[in-house]
Image (tube, rainbow, N blue to C red; front, side, top):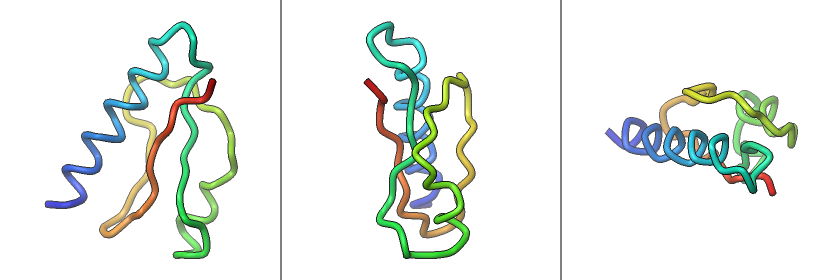
Length: 68
């Protein structure tokens, strides 16, 4: 249940970051070191894809922030 709720939050922020003319896109953020799988995606790359482009797993602590 937690993953589904977090996925919708991530999708909302990612989509709004792409459509906001002031933002460059979105970036995946997380605590780092929590798991090797997440660490590979914490690259700081700005993504400009609209729609769900965020790989997550159960108990994933990563999030999405707009890149300005």
